[in-house]
Length: 235
Ligand SMILES: Nc1ncnc2c1ncn2[C@@H]1O[C@H](COP(=O)(O)OP(=O)(O)OP(=O)(O)O)[C@@H](O)[C@H]1O
Figure 1 (cartoon, rainbow, N blue to C red):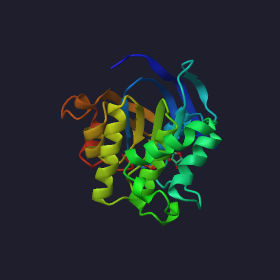
Figure 2 (tube, rainbow, N blue to C red; figure 1 turned 180 degrees about the vertical axis):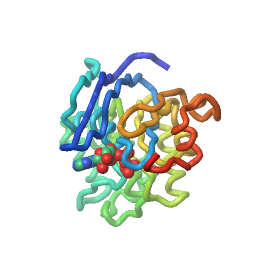
Figure 3 (cartoon, protein in one colour; figure 1 turned 45 degrees about the vertical axis):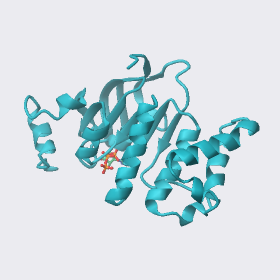
């Protein structure tokens, strides 16, 4: 894996009025990593994704490496337009300024990749939840991002749709994409991620290679409880 840094945060804080959602966050994202963000409800995962993506005002420093490339975010519930599957991807390429001559081939390739080529003419909003998420991934993939942010991408899906999305994400990783995903599913983090960042009340509680994160010893007491599913909100 190349060690080139794409994005760094230095002593970053984010607050919503009186709520300090993130504080003292320092990290670097390297090319080709698959980072899972885990932590209890309200620990700051979505806020960190949005801060990394540049969607929120923050204190501290966020630096994108020059020439880092495009960043795209996929949400838990994809926002799809009242258009066909094919047009939803095509329009994203249009808005991103991809030259007209390249668009069709890129849409076709992306739909093929996620297994939706045969549904290209369907209204996007008539797809199942799993298919809609695959369409959101096709749209993201077609933009050829350098970094893909994913906010609980399988949270509302059934087990087989979850598995399909995991397979696609593993394929994205194998193709060299850098991925950063929040998840409540520790099994999913274990299966997909190369690195796990554990957020605890807005701060980084652990930032480890995946295999080290899931070792049963040497963790802080709160992380041990979190891993066992026994972390109470008031502890
Ligand atoms: N728009 C907002 N206005 C005020 N407070 C907010 C807002 N968004 C998030 N917060 C607060 O910021 C903190 C972090 O929230 P965030 O959604 O980032 O956590 P999370 O780890 O993604 O949670 P979950 O797992 O429940 O999705 C929480 O205390 C939350 O209530």
